[in-house]
Structure formats: C-alpha cells, structure tokens
Amino acid sequence: MGENPNSKLSEILRPRLVAGKLLRRRLASEFAGVGENALLESYQSDTIKYRVFAGTWNVGGLAPPDDLDLEDWLDTKHDSYDIYVLGLQEIVPLNARNVLGPTKSSAAMKWNSLVGDALNKHTGRRREAEEGEAQAQQQFRCVVSDQMVGIFVSVWARSGLRRHVRHAVASCVGAGVLGRLGNKGAVSVRFMLHGTSFCFVCCHLASGGKEGDALLRNADAADILSRTSFRRGTATSAAAPPPPDELPRKILDHDRVVLLGDLNYRISMDDGDARLLVQAKKWSLLLENDELLLELSKGGCFDGWREGLVTFAPTYKYHRNSDTFYWGINGGSGAAAAAGREKKQQQRAPAWCDRILWSGKGLRQVRYERCGGYRLSDHRPVRAVFHAVCEVTGGVEHSGQAWRHL
Image (cartoon, rainbow, N blue to C red):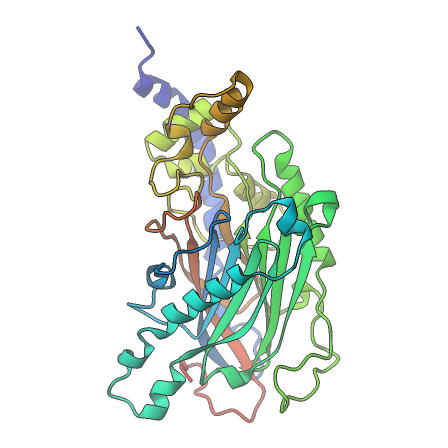
C-alpha cells in the first residue's frame, strides 16, 4: 500500500512552520517601512504624485494573434494610470538566427500596436462629461520603446503628461551566449518626469533549475546593473534643452528604479516535496524556498531592493492554452533519451519566475498580482502598481501633494 500523501505533506509542513514564521517576521519588518511616510521623506521642493503601472510577461516566442486583448492585464476597463511600462521577454524565438540577426523585428511593432489599442480603447468614454480638450489629454502616447532580440520595453504616458517626460532613452546589455549576446540580458529605459529620474530595467536572466544556476542569475543581475549606462545629449523634442551634466548614467543613480522581467529564479527544494505543496496550494511554504526571496533576505546582488508580498500562484511553467502545470502531464513517446529529458523537464516544480522589484524612496507599491487569464505562453503575466512622488522644480501648475491627472 502506498504512503498516504496527507501524512507525507504533514511531515513536510511541520519542520517548516518555525522557519516560516521567522522568515515572514523578517519580511514583514522589511515591508513595514514601505509606507506613505516613505513617499514624503526628505523632499525640499513641491511634489506631485502619479500612478505608475509596471507589467512583465514572457510570451514564449509566439507572435500575438491579431485579436489578443490586453485590457485585462493593463486594467484599462476598471482603472487607468499616468504612466505604463511594459516589459516583454521572448517576443521572438531565441534561436541563432534571431540572436545574431537584425536587432529590430515586426513583432515589437505588433506588440506596441496591441498595447496602444488597449490603452486608448476606453479613454474617450471615461470622461464623457468633460470638455473635448480634457478628453484628448486622457489618450496615451508612446514615450520610448526598444528591443534586444526577444526583450522588449515600451513606455506610455498620458498625452497631457507627455510634455513633462523628458530625456527618455534606452540602453541594452546582453548577458547571454559568451556573456554578451542578447538572448539573455536587459533593456533599460530612463526618463525624467518633472525633476525626478526614473529607470525601468526589463531583464531575462539565466534559465535552469540545476544546482548552481541561481548563481548564474545573480551574476547576470550584477552584470546588468554594473554595465548598463545611458548616453548623454539626447533630447526627446526639438524644444527641450540639452540634458544637464547631472543626468544619471547608471541604473542605481536614478531616483526611482523598477526591475522587472523573467528573472528565472526557481524553488530550491526536492521536486517531490514541492509537488505536494503545489497540489495543496501552500504558496507561502513554497516561497520559503524561493531563490529570489532568499537572495533578497541576505542582500548580495539585490542589496537594497524590495519586493511586494507574493500572494499569487506560480507564474511558470504551464502548458500553452491551458491552466495545467507542465509537470502535470506524463511524458510522451519517442527515443529513450529524448523521453527521459522530456519527463525530467515535465516534472520540474512550478516557480515564480516573473517578478517586479523596486529601489529608491518615493515609490509605494499598492498592487502586485498575476493575471491568470492569458494562456498564450507557458508564463503568466504579472503587474504591479506604484504611487510615485515627483519633485516639481517650478514652472508647472500642480496641486502640491494632491493626485494629479494632467
């Protein structure tokens, strides 16, 4: 007679309860300071607050269908934000032709078009009682977008806010084959909003669930943070003055920094134990062995970074067009060696590969969640919403600490 799975699960849970409480207390103490007071600390000039949406999705190398509706992910039916930053990974297959070929592709244009359609579909209706000029200001315009092989970033702002977004520029760092090619790495975008600098870093880090692979991911992240540099002398319009010498050049020199993407961190525990916890939906216990949370707790390459509490189901790995985890289906037929590799891959435990972190004062995260309705890829998209404080250096009408939708 086989072993009772409930008994086995109890054996797994018991020794983790004490450690789990300690970890949760540590995380709670770290997040306790990330509140409204942090937004208003140490600001000498007038400030204005905006709502910033950040989203990440590994789309699995598949071209989006023409009728793909991104409204649910971008939350445009129920709410709208001042700035949208979308980071995608694997918008093209990561084969040699794409890695070594042209840096731009039609896939980026198609994704950007779908984002624009979703953002502007409802904005004209939402302000029906307002004047026509105010309605026009609710439309969204693309500020900057860039692509490196499969990594793509697109930044959108309200039309009325667009004139205050200056010095937008992108920077690409490859960390893939030979430590330089773009199958892995990051596309980062920088811009000034009023007098405050923002940087968004869209990453695709080293994959793999073997022992030691987490160290490769740590090395990729450290490499991206150290090597990324933004050029000077780029203005976003003919009327804009040249960028001042004090514009930040490195990622961590910016006032507000958000890092998002397929960071590829896995669950560091026995696959069999992880399977039982997944089946029981014991997410908090699984997360005690999450490689990224362990790295955040000890500093290292993510020293000073924060992440909101992860309360959602794993984002990877699913069968396409299904809500079934990849290890939930038995291996198929074929040569013995291929079947063995396939079976091992299918038994790999699900993980929270897709994450959003932030650094710097003046950011408060108010939402962090997975969007489960998208089954195009073996990943699920993730979104976060931030309240961001910007310093206003003068010459702009504003409302002090009040919310402002320009």
